[in-house]
Image (cartoon, rainbow over all chains, first blue to last red):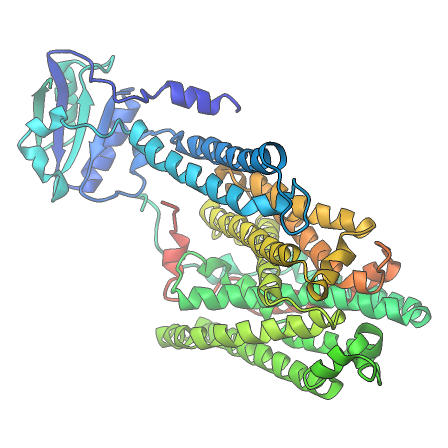
Amino acid sequence: MPFAPLRALASVPLLASPLPAGPYYGLLAEFATPADLYHACERVRDAGFTRWDAHTPFPVHGLEQAMGLRRSPLPWIVLVMGLTGAALGFGLQWWVHAVAYPLVISGKPFFSWPAFIPITFEVAVLFAALGAVFGMLGLNRLPMHHHPLFRSKVFEQVTDDAFFLSIESWDPRFDPSTTGALLESLGARRVELLESR
Amino acid sequence: MTPGRDLVALRPEQAAIPPGHPWNRLPVVGAACAVPGVLACAILGAANPKQFFFSWLVSFLFFLSLALGALFFVLIQYAAQGGWGIVLRRLGETSFTTLPVMAALFLPLLFGLQDLYAWAVPGAAEHDALLRWKAPYLNVPFFLVRAVVYFGCWSLIAIFYYRASRGQDATGDPAVSARMRRLAGPAIIVLAVTQTFASIDWIMSLTPHWYSTMFGVYFFAGSFVGFIALLSIAAAAMLRAGLLDTVISAEHLHDVGKLLFAFTAFWAYIAFSQFFLIWYANLPEETIWFQARLEGSWRTVSMLLMAGHFAIPFFYLMGRAVKRRASTLAIGGAWLLAMHFVDLYWQVMPTLHPAGLRPSVLDAAAFLAVGGCFLAAAGWLMRRQALVPLRDPRLAESLAFENA
């Protein structure tokens, strides 16, 4: 269990690394309904693919189970950042008030820990929030100014009424013809091979 | 929504205690606790009435706060039109419908007002300018009038909501829900005001010179943590006993756990804010209350509350898996319920034993007596009705509920 966050972090390229080079980005399949996409995801998950994603105009409940997604490591980032913030906030006040520049304030001891709690709390919340926002961006490899998926004209409908499943070409099980046939057999309306970059 | 999960409402037998089930005996179990408790209180209390009244006050406040927390839990769900908690609502209704019983359990305290409250002793105000100034509020007749108002308001709200919800089981009329939702807002305001003043009357006035403007919300925070803790234990116990096992899912437990976690933090926030402002300002008339609790063995109890009512459960309940398993959630709930009792004990008892912590057999006897009555009343109510509001318009939504 203590290694869970480390393992999870190691599996995610934290920095916005460029996509692997290759002749293709991968295959993009369009589905007509959320249910079609949902069942296609279950089959792609069971076929053992690891580098793929689903794209929908709205959240589809249970899709993460259908895709077999693991829990995000984000909570661990937030926890570590929150504790770091609390330690820094408390440590700074202790150092200032008890070590570097001790002043008698309203007759209280130099190290008056109750007076440090509000700042400690605020810094913990600040660090946890920053960890949540930038951790989320990092895990999603954002900001990313261009993505090969945007080469597809039909993909524009992803914010409107179409449901997509994309499998990346660097997935170990990827093969342009058999994977394409698999997606078609799952009820895709259209399957498109996307070039890299 | 996960495909394949059906939205068929419940069959009544899925939400009832089957004949011959051990939970049918809850009223008997409650009575079996209450009778020896009352007897022990009568015998031991005759020798030491002062200790009896303080012990009774702690246990009375403990179970009263659970019932008031339950009332808030149900009212806030109506006001916010919450869907997830419908399957748990009847546990709340069962808990708060004990409020008329709590009114009866308040009566013994009336014989000990002079033992409990320094301001109630005749002539106490004569040589005490502060008490003289507070006398228009802190006097026995007005105290009694207020108690009648509190219990009147609480019993009225409790019985109205209990009856309306049970009536809907028979009629299935969605207009009942709309009516209860409209009344929930005003009822919350009435509850907030009465609960605040009740905590001032019954706990804060134990130290009549002292005052804290945060005391009402401090009592509320404790009462809500206490009820959610009780809810988590009750849900886990029911699942283990094979009741509602097709109804309460990990999703419901998860949300109960989230509330427990959130209000543990809320309690700590309020408790620390109350302490912090008084500690910082350092005004003698405000610090007396905390001074009494930071000396001798009461200091140890204060430290226990900091760790046990906040730090330990805060980190214990933080994770997702802990909240989704009935057994681990109930461990957190049982711990916090115990800490809620310690909290009330720590608020009341230093008035009687300023020198330090002195537990008494009467503490246990009063707990058995009041707790037995609470359990008997709740168990009796559970047998009379479905364990879930069977025809609430949102029941299907609650059954199919999933955390995003």
